[in-house]
Image 1 (cartoon, protein in one colour):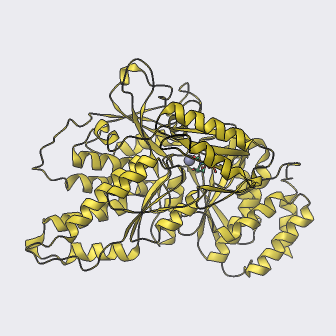
Image 2 (cartoon, rainbow, N blue to C red):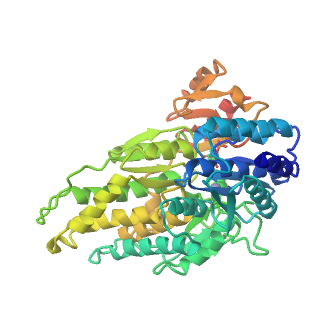
Image 3 (spheres, rainbow, N blue to C red):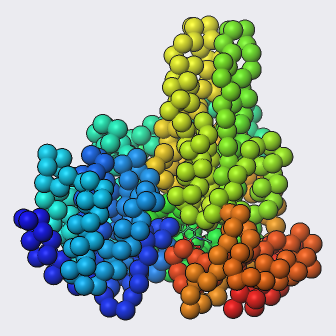
Length: 552
Ligand code: NG1
Ligand code: ZN
């Protein structure tokens, strides 16, 4: 009863917006910040319930990633640091859209009963709150706190301004019983980076000139300022951060950031012809996406893009090399007694040339629908699962079994086999598992891993970019009244509804050599997205446009 009164009282301070329907989607709720207070308040309640139910710390991140600065959003980090379990998404949708306060209270009461959540019992709730640098973040943070404190026994802990992956990392680590702070995050990243660098064979002659420095576009968001912190702890890399979001540097995500760079294939603001030939990288607004690029010519600001697919390819190549070293018999007698199952997860947006390249490496490749939750889940089925979206969101997951096997490999070795190639390979894989974020894609840890591998291989970004040649591609979107009218199958590669549309796409695609095209409803915007690739840019453009005509 006390709980009921508390909820009614606090809910009355956050009336829901009229005439909008929100959906939890693949990245939580996102909308114009001005209409989000009630949603964030309600998600605060949900997070408290989730924390009581799972007897674990839950995370709430206030961010709208690469969206424009006037937008904001909220997403939930589950106990393992991953996305909210899909079975709770319908409840999230229901409470966010309940207009009548009575309906709202009833939804909660029913859900608590159905899920058997012991509110007011011995189990307390703890929620970590993080937010990006958006000005609307503070007001929304307050709404989240009020939502949390309207559940009896729930406590909100404000972790301050963070990247999305930092918050997920903290939730995961806390639930593993470890101490959590931002400095422990930076230490873990920089220590494991150093470990990888120390393991670079000294005798290897560097065949090509390694890039002297890396320029990083921080999208005028939270990632730039965090990278400034991290780089102080990292020896052996020269990193120049631009678009840090400091006064006068520019607007969040406006012609800057990983999303802009990957979609437009031009250099972000703040880069000029002085940067031709230099290795560059771009983060998105909450630093969970990373792409690399270099500007080949002073004539225009077109870039040679190293996207998520190519980052995935670099990681895969390096990990395969380590696994190969591990399975080699050496005099030490140490042999791999278990074969590590390595898998790669992509979506239909992966450039066809990347998939071809990975196949040639002999890798096991699987496709899932767009959305990190699908890729992550699939990657977790392997001993080592690498997933990336072309847009630069991805990470590498190591199974517990694989980690303990690697640990035993490194511990058991006799003094004679210390320093053997096998021993080093095991140490490298362990360092990667510590460096790369096991909760979600993380631009900062991803960047350090890419840099470590480039140093190891003595590769420049130009060498990396030539691993394979991307097929020309084009992405378009068309605004539609109801995006749910389109449904797809086979990891979004085939349209099921409306009927006849897939046949139309097939006949357009057949007109172009190496043609491939698909459409799907966006999970984050009211649009249908169109993707096309073909042997030339003109062909990809034409194909995308003609498919878009059919989608309208
Ligand atoms: P939607 O709007 O569903 O296409 C976009 C990205 C996803 C993912 C989500 C979450 C593309 C084509 N789509 O989803 O990959 O990152 O945002 O932020 O880049
Ligand atoms: Zn993001």
